[in-house]
Each structure stands twice: as C-alpha cells, then as structure tokens.
Amino acid sequence: MERLEANHIDMPAIHEPTTAGANTRVPGLGLTLLKMVLQFVFMGAVLLVAAGTLYWARAWIYLGVGLFCLAVNASIVLRINPQAIVERHKKHENTKTFDKVLTSIITLATVGIWIVAGMDAVRFGWSSISAGWLYAGVALHVLGMAAICWCLATNPYLEKSVRIQADRDQRVITTGPYGFIRHPMYLAMIVMMLGCPLILGSAWSFVPDGMCIVLFVLRTALEDRTLRRELSGYEEYIQATHYRLLPGIW
Image: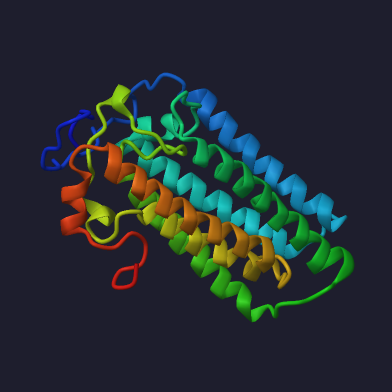
C-alpha cells in the first residue's frame, strides 16, 4: 500500500511483514496477551453461566479447540508479525463511525450466541443438534482460525477497527490470501462462526450467529467503499483482485 495522499493515487506495492525473532520486544505485547486470556475466560464464563452447569461437554470442547487454535496462531504470528496482535487490541481515534456502531452490535450478538447456546442446548433444551455435527463444527472452527492466522501473518495493518492508518504508513497488501479476495479476514471469521452452533449443539444459536454474519457482510461492503475512496492504490488493487468476500460471487 502507498502512503495516504489526498489527491494522488499510485500503484499498490507489495508489503511484507517484518520478521521478528522470538526475543524481539514489542511494546504492549504482555498486556495484549493478558487481554486475550481474559476475553477467553469471559467467553467460558458466559457459556457455563447460561447453561447453569459446569458439566457441559460440548462447551468444554469448544473452549478447548478455541484455546488450542489461539495458542497455535499466537505462536506463529508472534514470530512473523507480532505488532499486528498489539495493534488489533488498541483503540484508535479515527475509527469510522459506521464501524463503531457495527462493532458494538457484533459484540453484543456474539455474546448472544453463547447465552442462547447455553440456555438452548443445556438449561431448557429448546432444540438439539446431533453429536455427529460436532466434528463438522470443529473442522469449520479450525479452518477459520487457520485462515485468520494466515491473514495476521500477512497483513501488518490488520486492525480490528476500520480506519485509514496514515499514522502507520498503510500500504495495500496484495500477497497471501489478499491475492484471492480483498477481505479474507471476514470470510475466515464467518467460517469460524458457522462452526460455533454445531459444536455447542444449539440450533437456536444460529439466530444471533446469522445476525453476526450479515453484519460482517455489511461491514465488508462499507470498509471496501472506504478503502476505495480514501486509500491510495486500492482502486488499482481492485482491478487485479475482483471479489470482496467470495471468489466468483461477490
């Protein structure tokens, strides 16, 4: 990506993340990792409180698979692109207003998935998904997390908020998964989220899950529009990488 310039658009350049050794010190990394652990603990607490019991095997499988994938992803990204992890957990002043709204709703809907799943699959038994679907759910979760790792290892500008990162000399990334679609991180998260109700065994949790997916599609469209308008070189990138989220479709 080229530096943001108000009235000038250059051809996109390939930017590779800086390789960082295991002993490289990244400011704020320790606090960031602590936040990630606390978020994971919060997720487990919501699931088990909603279920009303600690004896929910599918929830523990979900947490175990998630923790394993998180540990593997972190170990890889910390060696290749550690700054991406830190930047994803910072708040930025110039985040787009639409993203602040969408992020808040997505966060609430995500918590809603865990609450509905616990109440549905365990506490009240409104629906059930057979144990056979558990394996499909795990496969989707692992596939999504692997794709997320690929995105984080490739793109040093992969923050959680939608903004133009002029302060970080943002450049268009055209390598790795970004050579196939323009927003592979969102596709990875959608795939991962599709596996959640299957692992937890709750059909009703597909309702908030589906809401999250719709919001991610909307966020993709709005972010893509923002980048086309404001990021130098992005319009040329579109000419080479035609699809936002699904190759051959959109």
